[in-house]
Image (cartoon, rainbow, N blue to C red; front, side, top):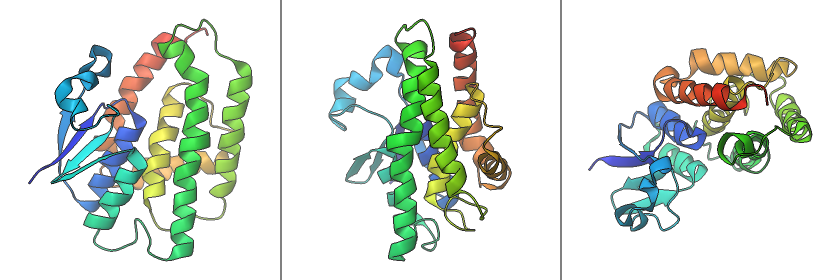
Length: 218
């Protein structure tokens, strides 16, 4: 049976799932939902996901949302080994820590900074919120010190989740240059992650165009 993914390309969480699927060799049946048109509120989708959020995965009788849970599920079920989501408790804990860090600090602070202007009519960006985002990026820079990937020298699902976020920051005009480990890691992701340009780049380009239009001069 096909594995359905309800998604929007501009969504970083959706792109993290698409990157994970590329890594494990799963072909997703992509079902585009236009949130701006309210398609996520249609009864047929709410019947699948009562929280009516994306991404939402349907794999047989499993209906799953929350992007990081979807990424770890795909890696656990379809990965050829446990390298993407290690079974070793200590290594897995480090991966999980970064997944929660992205959700609760890194991507969250980006949203707090740009989304009020991009989507909710706020006139000006708040410099204090930009400082908080750079604080989180500084923490990520420290986490990346001394190794090639997010956790050690092997790619894990943490890289897919984090790169979907950080690449979004980059095209939205966030200056990453002072976070040298972040910029070096981002370049490795762009050049070294399987399916990066197919799964991530189109959506990143779309959100970049929107950010340029909405955030310029703010």
